[in-house]
Length: 70
Image 1 (cartoon, rainbow, N blue to C red):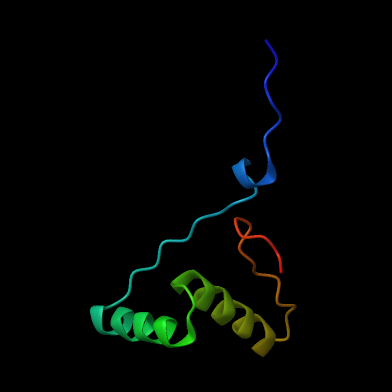
Image 2 (image 1 turned 180 degrees about the vertical axis):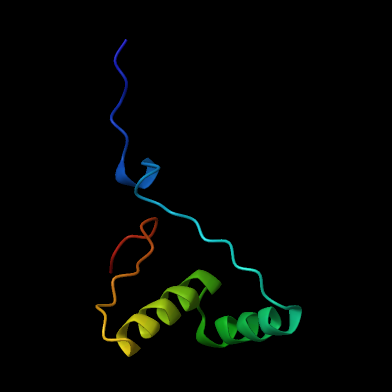
């Protein structure tokens, strides 16, 4: 019995998870910002990580592998 090859989005090595603990006031402010920008919290986090990389002279390479590139 042969198995179907895994797609990149189901490859455990293709996706890494990050748990972030944040105070309730900060989470509320981020949720409001996400609603104002019509974005998700994940999209805001990716934007923030890429901005941090750019600020420190690094290439902005953070993306969501579960979302199709536009």
